[in-house]
Amino acid sequence: MKQKIALIIIITLLSFPTVFASGTELSAVKTTSSILLDNEEKNITAYLVNNNNYFKLRDVAYILNGTDKQFSVNWNEKNNVISIETNQPYVAVSSETEVSDSLPQCSATPTPSNIYINGKKIEFTSYLINDNNYFKLRDLGEILDFGVDWHETQNTVLISSTSGYYDVNPISPWDYQAKLGKGIDVDWSKTEKGKEYYNTKAVQDFKNSGVAHVRIRIKDKADNNLFLTLDKQIDDCIKTGIIPIIAYQADEFKNNPDEKNIQEVVDWWSIVAARYKDKSYLLSFDLLIEATDALNKQPEKLNELYERIVTEIRKTNPQRIILISPRLRSDSQYLSELKIPSQANGYLMAEWHFYAAGPSKDNYRKLWTVGTESEKKLITDKINYALDWQKKTGIPTWVGAWMPGNYNDGDDYSIDEQVVFADFITSSLANAKIPFAVNSDTKFYDSKNNNWIDSMLPVFNTIFK
Image 1 (spheres, rainbow, N blue to C red):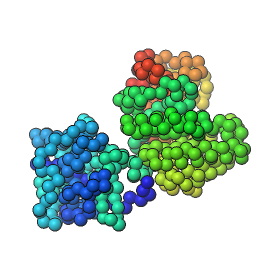
Image 2 (cartoon, helix red, strand yellow; image 1 turned 120 degrees about the horizontal axis):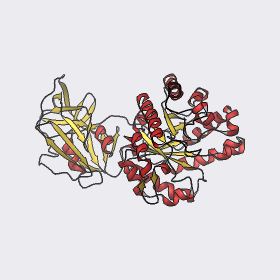
Image 3 (tube, helix red, strand yellow; image 1 turned 135 degrees about the horizontal axis):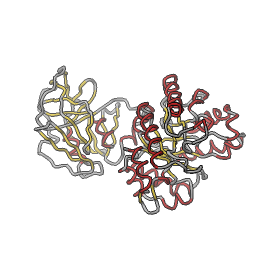
Image 4 (cartoon, helix red, strand yellow; image 1 turned 180 degrees about the horizontal axis):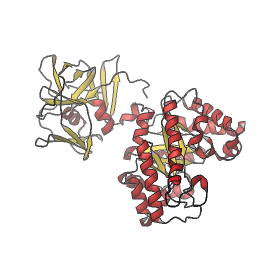
């Protein structure tokens, strides 16, 4: 994996007439870089604008046609709209990959064309050059998930149809936070039943229902028995477009944080990190599921654990996102006690929880009845602790678990009551721009039969609307 992407390259777009947008006219200079697709050189004209390389979209669609990364391109002149559909064949219009005989330098003017990918409007920086629309290749590579890299010493742009964008390019914690969106905790690798019933269709069903990431909870040893199922789960997620997060239980350490148990957790992560060092950067490592029990009274042991694990992981994964969480069941109020590991490398996030086992009608710490102002304040206070910590440290956070009802402790909230509670938490976190995972998949989805649980759909739809 590349540790440094030296230049932002690329591009693309359209051989269609377009209305000029008001804006400053810039200089566009033909690039001298070689363009390789899967190590085969392609004869494409690109331009350098503001030190970035830009290519025609149709050129990129043309050379990727017939591969796993192909996409179609259509132009609606009346509405000034460019439509892209992934996994669809491209229909050529005869002007693709023609080498321009224009002057080495010409003008570039911002263009106002609207871009839609699979029906969703996407914002791109684009320019009209010689009556064609040009876009950054990296913008397209990221949103369409094909590999883009740059070899500075060879002055070469590399495009790959066999890898994803984040197979090569690390992602910053703040960009990762923005991508996480709404997710769900899954039982796929935690219980024997979860492993037995796991199937790829569940991943696709989650994706179709708006689930952006999954938190895969694990308690077993890091051995071949685990990897037989975990490998497939990670690959299915990445292929489907869901972000996978591995989270480790580490019960022995939480019950007794002595040297032996610390080292066992470090060893577990060493094996897992080495196993997945070449996986997409979208895969992240959540180091510990809820610091509880004896560990609550020894926060220094928690920080020691994180320092040692992160140091070990960085030997094989120098730029992968790692998540650490505070004590007392990952309470955001204790984020301030966390010490940033020395090898964080700028690829660190913090995870926190609230209502992971649902609200309560009598526990004042997580009280929720009808949504009084004081009950709402319990929620917003926790969010504000996280926002203050983010601002102070520059490190983004994520809610790793919250539950709409007290399913494991009485289960005495009606569906209507759960909807009201879920709506307030969802909207509060969305307003704070903090992503979250709901606890858990088994409450909403029947993996054995690949069906959503009808009675829970009002709650699920409230969260993932």
